[in-house]
Each structure stands twice: as C-alpha cells, then as structure tokens.
Image (cartoon, rainbow, N blue to C red; front, side, top):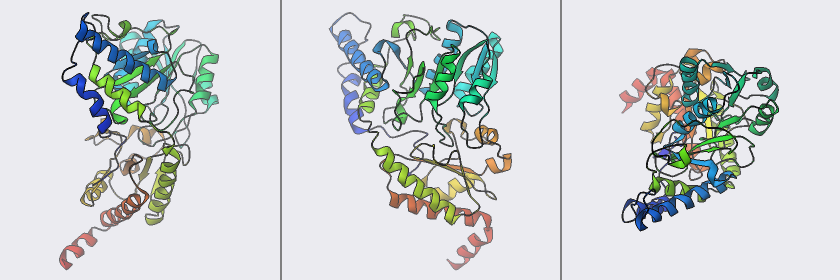
Length: 383
C-alpha cells in the first residue's frame, strides 16, 4: 500500500509509543494529585509542555494541551473573541477548516458577532492589502490558516499578522497542516493551533498557544486544570506522545519532499492533460498535491486507485462521505461539477519519488477508465 492521505492522519511513530507506554501503565497518576504518583505525572506534563513550547518558540505557560486541532481552533476563536472583545467583528477566509468556520458561525448566531471574509486569489492566497481592506474598527480577531488542508496553499502569515497587529487585533492561525513542515516559531502570531496525530502522535491530543497578554475565556469549566484554560484531568500519556513527536521533527526533509512533489505534479499533468493542479503552484506544503480531473468523479478515482494499492482522499477527512463539493474549491471559483472531481494526495518523507511515479501512472489509468467505460469492458472480455 502507498499511503497518500497524511493530511488526514499519520501513523503513530514507534518512538512516540515507547515514550507514552510508561504513562499508560505503571506511571498512571493524576497530575493534580499531591502524592508521589501524581507528582510524577505532573512532572511529565511539565516536561512535555516545555518541549512543545520550545518547538513553537513560546513560553510554557502559554501552551494549553487540548484534544486536537478542532478543539484548539474552537478555544482560540471563541476564547479570544469572548475574552476581551473590542467589538463584534471576526475576520477570516472562506477557505478555512470547518472548526474555524463553525466557531465563527457559533459566535454569529449566539453572541451577535459579524463575520467578514477576506478575498483570496485563484490560488487561495491572501495578500496583506486584502486583509487590511477586510479589517474594521470593531474587528476583534483575525483567524487565517497557515496552510490549507485541501489544496495545500501556504499563506504569508508573518506579513498578515503584522497587518492585524497594526490595527491592534490579535491574530490566530490554524497550523495543523503546516506543523512538521514549516517553521512556526517565526510567524509572529498571537495564537497557534496544532494537532498531534498529523505529527506521528496518537489521535486525541493537540495544543494551543495563546500569547500571555491575550485574554482567553475557557470553553470547559471545572477544576481549573491547564491554568484555567481547559478544565479536566489532563491526557498525560497523550501530552508525552505529542512532545516525543515534536522532538522527532526534522524540517530539513521539506526541500527533498518538495522536489518529489514538483516532479509528481508534472508527471500527473503530463499523463492527464485535462487535469489541473489546485492551490498555489509553488507556495504550498511540501507533501501535498491536489488536482481536479474534469469528466470524472473524485470518489470514483479513489476507488480505482485503491485497486492499485494507493490510498488518498478527495479532500478534507472531516467532510468524508459528503456529496457536497468542496467549500474550498467553490471559494476558489471552481464550478461545483469540477470541484467534485478533486483528489488530494498528501504524504510524508517516507514516500519515495519512485512510488510517486507509480501513483501518477495509476492516476492516468484511473482517469482513462472513468472517461472511457468501454475500456473496462474490453479489458474484461480479453481476460
């Protein structure tokens, strides 16, 4: 099997499992308990928080462990918007993950916020000028993802954050997809959401950085864990696993993977002339390539590819099973019938250029069969 759906999730790395194992067995204490077993768990939690904080280039006290990217986005957007709002206006894009869009919509429906959407170009990029035009005197938060989870376009977050800060507005970025590929410590933002299972940690653990000076209203109330930002007994083993995964990140692989990605894109476009790459041609995640294949259906291509041992997706895993076209592609101006032909390939550094070449051949075969059903019948007769 060639697994090309790393944007949806990644396998747990062996080193991560080994780091977690003691906290799933003998070292099982509650970090809030004031005895030896509890203090051991608390120590592990502190160490893990410090590791994640160093990776993000922030203070340990500014990192909150969550259940994953979705909760981190919810806590960032609702928590900052309600913590000390200077107005009732949110700024985002129509390309965001559902966790961001639904959080904004919740604030609209239940707290009287307005949601303003920044214009993007055909590749999904936001310019500083476009963001400046969307900001109002009553804007209270800007939230724009570092990299899009469907088409892979990377935003100029540092420049966008500067525009937001010039107006005195906190800036949040969802870095779930870019974490592990791009440097997050130099973004200059006020809040960052990350998720463990995109980094080789287990599902169910994530983190949120919120700059200390930014007020944050908690979503979950109770015993005051995580310095009051997220009550509830902490997932110590998950936090240890996330810290272990973060420690294994090597950004030097990005250039190698980017080169393989570019070769794969050219190969697919050469084999399937009617195909089109979605997202920005160069400002994109190293291991992500998304295409539309007019005259086919994305889900049908996926089924054909799986017969070749290739696992990929038609877009966000959070929208799997939906017959609706991708909201991202619609926002980029693709007609619904073209958006439904999308296939996303996403992979890590363990996928070779040779494997990608075989995937490109499988894609060409799948598209040819779907565009010419008689070809399948003829092949069956010959067999």
